[in-house]
Length: 182
Length: 310
Image 1: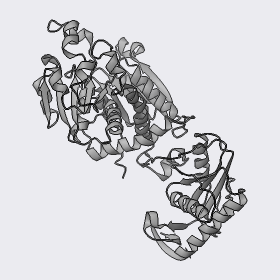
Image 2 (image 1 turned 30 degrees about the vertical axis):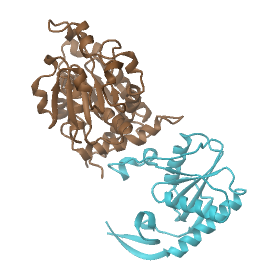
Image 3 (image 1 turned 180 degrees about the vertical axis):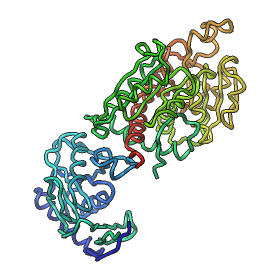
Image 4 (image 1 turned 135 degrees about the vertical axis):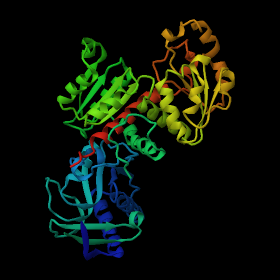
């Protein structure tokens, strides 16, 4: 399968500005982010959650704990999507019981990743509330799941792919809309 | 990145990166043993057939628990009830089991090579849970995981094994595994249990018949099970074995203080090991058991989540 880049959705500056806006929205709408912890979904939810925590701290907010969640074992599409899956470690260095957990991911699409992440969280305890923060919401949900904090809504078709590139993983910083060509 | 495992019949055919991959994959499953809720739904709807033609308690319970924590169901064949006792051939028995459509078969057999034979006849993955005196690959993997956790690395370790090495599939699999990472082995026990042929298993194997000598410089001391039925052959009495080869606190003082002590179980206190060593700070026998779950979950996940060839 070949892909072609159709357009750039966000530049490095726009990503940065969006994350700062999301950070202040989170503080504002969670009563000062008390009891809040971020859980970044591997892979790109991880650097995004770390940046959000840094942005909250930089603006004088509390130091929000950050965890990492690998959802491989909770997927419902193992044999179709990942014929030879690789499981990675999760690292949630705080008690999830009674906390407000904000799941963080780069793109919200079918909602299945978030369903898997919630199952993973439940195995660790009983959060008081789970919310979701994503950089991009591209629509096409297959489950009744919505994000509480959205960086940008993007209209897409089925064949299009949103590619989020972050310095920490991809050594470049931008969001692209690409399309599959036969 | 994923080498793709269809079966696990032994350690001998594996490369160091393949072994490292399986150990890395076991790590997330170690975390799961610490979760309040340990059951996953990952392999829901899949069935693991446990075919133990030879008696086993811990390995069978470990595989059963591993399967159940992944959400898979198990079907059980046990040695006592085996139709082999009624004269059915191994191939007929496993074909019968296979006809009930399990997704994987975990097999233990008293004959070396039996799982390899079965793997040639079945399409589903076969995991060797111990075959004769040949291999016990998941034991070697869980031992390696335990060593890596305690020592920080598997590279260039000095491994001392004490006991009946000749008949031990645990020893053989461990030599194959740790040998891939440059281990130096000191094999120690009564001469009839430590024959010269064992020196060909890996590049750096030496035989030592005095336990005091064997413990010097050891990073890891592996105590093997002594089967008393093999002891009362005329060569050696139980009393002599204890006197000459039991791992006692006094003898452990000859090893470096950071050396660790391992035992694959079942462990006979007062025979091959003194209780003070078995329960001491250098002992990791219970970590081995917990790591066994992690390794077996990782392995079941690997062989059962690979999509069938289309």
